[in-house]
Image (cartoon, rainbow over all chains, first blue to last red):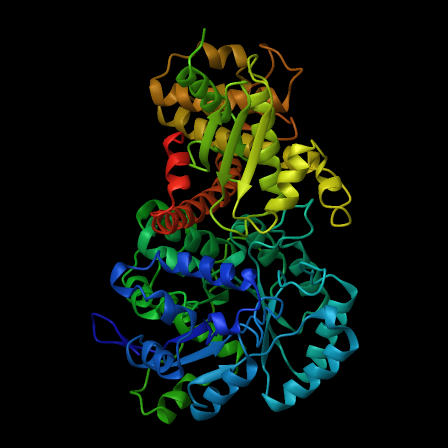
Length: 347
Length: 253
């Protein structure tokens, strides 16, 4: 829980965390080494006192995660968003079994999402059914840039992806978190295209599509899609980490999201362990929109809105009753969630 | 007769005209070029690194080909070798650029088109980004939306501006000319990307739209710079004992 300056208790759900193993022993090839290299360089936009040594960053343990999120990091609940990356890591970068093992030890704290890859065809569909039952899946993380054999990525509009989305509807997996960031193929197109989310969201109105990293660096395309499709949400992972070195830029992102999507479709995520939730949350809770951006956002960044972003919006998608959860976790009661945001720019 | 350092200056200036299409800044300002050398026969060799091993190969290929072509235009140059270092597709890219291949031939089976479309698309983004910055600047110094919607290239050139204004104008005009090579001095200078004139009463919503283009480029730029800074720090440590590398660095900037 985060306690505001006025003493109010704020419930926090971190919508994007990982327990990865990128150690040399698990690296399949140079790609595995370079992948974690890239993450480690992203890590360095943290405040210096939060830097981890390289070795710990490659592989940390359950106790680190529990401490960083729930003891030090103000987080009350967190959701695993695994990236498998089987072409780079022998036993996967994110691994459902490891995530599930920790989730079972702390069922009131953690939710373990799954993943699928449409290029795995029929076999993958069978696997998804099994995992949905085994891990009680409510959501999946799709890493559309993942390599698989000769393929260097896929799109949600691919026919097989549609079959997997059908299967999600059937299995009650209603939260589809889509990583949108640098994909490598197709090589002759703009590699950050988010248009496939548009197709999927209108074909599957019963599923929620949470676009992680708010589609950066295609924020404008993402906002456009999100205004058209009411079941598209903004996941703040990655964007939120810019708050330290590029505060004004982060404020501009929040401004655009508030204007186009309103306050009810923005979800907090730290992207732990690239970044620690502690400093991100401290800085976010302290944030104010300057006057020029208030006019552009058509909103002020009130405590009500911050509470929506920090937990209430995510709780709605995952059927989490925050009041009951507070009782279960032995936390003080929190105020009732505010009503719907009615001041959305368009639509 | 031109000496070695003059030649390197000219190579450097030529490389300065090559931009990263996504970030719309030059490869020299972004510090991608890690070394350059001119040998006794006036053959130029250039090495460059991108911020990560994972940078999109299409952009890497574009930049490498543009560097090759920009340097080859210098009249004394007798061959250019461009080498991308530490990239997952370095081998394919370096071979393709050396053989002056089209992108689709360098990556057989992975793409069905060359890079002309993507080059054009990012030229359009550069145009919008530079236009927004210039227009906001002009509004700030008192120009009216009505004037901008009707101004010709000649009239824009006739404005007396301070150094910041001149810098923004030069950048914008460069993109305007590349996008509309057949347009002349009397043509409208502020138009939408598709050539349609601006409506002065709708200027603020238009600027909001093109600000999105700038914001995306800024995101790429800031991620790119922080990754590059880290990558350089690593290289310094890794190469400390490497005599060959030190000699090579003496010729670099």
